Length: 530
Image (cartoon, rainbow, N blue to C red):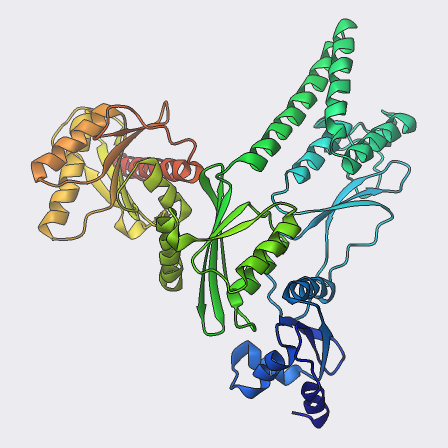
């Protein structure tokens, strides 16, 4: 360590505040906060360091500090300095969506642009009025996109000579060809600005639109009235959605953070209106001792903050962090010990995911949803799906495809030439191929799948059930009836509708489609050989 740097460390304050590391080019490379600045900075130099921390220390040429009144002020200052300098060695979550800003440009026919800050925290220089920021998940961001289409504000980089696709989609009035006067276009721009500056104006605007729709209908301008009606419906639906998202108790985040030395492994599962609908995964090296707190701060600077956050291990500065997130989101935010809550099982599942992630990629969200949708006891990691293909009595075949963790495992696919019937009999054919498949597994003492899926309705399901009963094997057995897109179970006479479980539904359809493709491919091959 250089003598000059030693002197600066010796003279560092022992109060709470922020410390700033710079390199030989006077660039800010790291910003941190501490209860005791001197003690924290000394820890970088007094311990044996490795990895990213060692590289950081080798690049420190200068140190500055800023004293604050308390830890909370230090946290806020640290956050602002990181946004300002975007230091190389601070945690930056690339998967997290950045803040969005809306710009109404200063042009004869203004454009509406949605911009992000660049890596150094600046917005592209464009002459115009800037609105924002709007964070990921902010309902107002969706309002803006809808309003742009309703007011038909152009988004093209340069004014074309002829109308483009946006005109034909009804998203632009075509000022380039003079299909709207400059005065009329400007009125729409001003109305949009009013709403962006005061979102309460949206209610007034909807009332104006309703009156305008009635007038157009009286004048028998029914096409215009329909367009206005559709715009009103879009805006009212958005308002309803915003209200739901503000009041729903089941908008929650579940966070599991595993710290291994200086390495962080983290997953965030987001529950929206009672359904897990998003999962994000992160792994990175950290500098701070409490890497979990560091991660949470960085993540929620650029993402929607729910009212309640469940976590596997409470950060040391829980109250401080709650205060920070509450101020950031302008609402009360609670951080809850997930292990001691009623959601303990979900926290444990995410922890299991992180451990599996290190080995082979984690449990897919579709598999998690499928367990919930079908009320299974275990996660259906291994699924086998059966289908029958008939192209004349000469070529009656069956197929079995296997998915592991929602991914096809083609080396495990199997084909069957039907032997027990010479006529088209789907029920007998299904019974035969299910029996042959699991008789062989039983004979070879190989593991059975977690779930068996049959392409067909209740009768195909019963045929498969008979085969398993004759073998004395109990498996989770279901069938998928394509016409009404319903699932049938051997345990319940009522069909199951899983459309609300989007990922699970897509997985089921993928399995059925793949089994059908594989059976048809074999059928065509057999017919060519006959």
